[in-house]
Amino acid sequence: MGLFYEDAFMTVLNMSVTASYVTLAVLAARFFLRKAPKLFSYALWSIVLFRLICPVSFSSGFSLLGLIGSYQVDNTFSAQYIPRKIGLMAVPQVNTGIDSVNAGINAALPAATPYASINPMQVWISLAGLIWLAGMVVLLGYAILSYQRLVSRISTATWVEDNIYETDLIQTPFVCGFIKPRIYLPLRITGREREYILRHEQIHIKRLDYLIKPIAYFALVIHWFNPLIWLCFSLFSKDMEMSCDERVVETAETGEVVNYSSSLLALAAQKKMPSPTPLAFGESNVKARIKNILSYRKPPYWALSVSLIAVLILAVLLASNPMNEPQTSSPQSAASLYNVEYLLNNKTSYVGNNSKVGALLNEMPLPEGITRGNFVLSTDNPPYGLTSYYELEDDSLQVSEDQFLRNSILLFALIDNLDQVTHTGFWHNKLLSSTPFQFSYTRADAERVVGGDVRQFAKDPESLEELIEVVKLLGSDTTQAQATLKGLELYPLSERTMVISPIAALRHLTDR
Image (tube, rainbow, N blue to C red):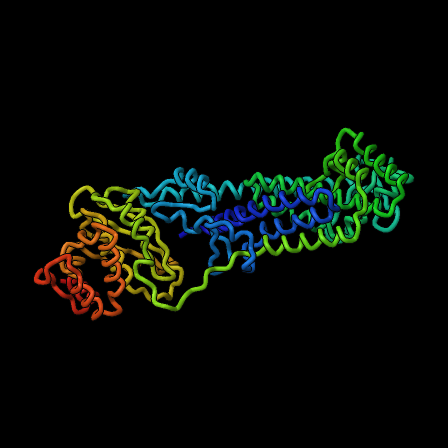
């Protein structure tokens, strides 16, 4: 049973992968909008921000993320590139949508170890989750301490008018505060230069940038391990400042634009120009901003309309998840529940083949509400056994053994020297874990159901599909199961012992 921070870390990982794809799309769109007002580029970052802080989204048939073949959406409308229970998988695998990346990552992931009390992947997930928490603590601590130092430095600032304050203890103007934001100016800024800077900072306040930037920094803190998000934060801050500059110069005369550029250049002459804290606004990226101001021309109305429509369309395409394929109510082939080719590729003559046994287990479907855990292989002395562990998400779940029986018969068919399979499950409530459910089957049990050596069904895809069709009927339609078995030509009919009720018969066998 995973700890809360491990589950949170897995959720953040999936959000980060989704946000990375969205970031790449925004970077491409930003390039094509480079001649448009920076307000549109600034607006595009809101899509990335949404993906970074919101684990769920709405579904749309027009989602660009649907182009990623591996993209899946669970029942909470959350992206699933990395399985939430990957730490419990016998053979952990991720699917990012890029085959080469998948191959590299999956090859490095540790598989479950026989006789180990804990899956090695669980250890790595737990360690990574702790490192993730530590990184967040460091970045949050840095932001809080720097903000406190800044507040202490400007505590002696002199009120000028409205929400404007002046002090000689700062080198660059900025906005500070969350509820009642204030503008702080160095004493040396006067005249027309002061007017331009004030107009710029007032636009920040009017657009609520003083709230948006802390939210963006918080998203960076959560996803600090992703280099793309650091790039996002840098470009987001740059577009924020440039869009404010453009608002300042939109109604200005040519001479005023030059004067405003000179004001920024004067600020750039200072030795230290970084923002006083990640949560406040300082004058940064001055060189790029001056170039943008001098080249800026207010676009015509039609260009603004086209840019706005493009941004709105892109927002829908990137903020939405792809539609899940509709579930059909028509009868489904039993073979479609299993990947026959995959099962045969992982067929093994030895139960000690950890990777292939784990791969087979991962391919076996489970009842809803049950999650696969680690497994243990008994290979020292016969009878050679396999014990698979499970977790129940709902403590009130009534567990049926039908699916475990089906899976066991297939395992006996695909693992030549497997003698016994045991399924043990634990409820989420620790008070109930002392009485786990347990189903155990032997090879003799499986052979009694099919009337002969079950391994003969794994000789080719057609035979395995026939076995799958048979096991699907166990516990649901015994008459049809008998008819199916009688129609098979794998064994002479005289060698086949028919079972009236497979589930009841196996219980009788295991109890005798």
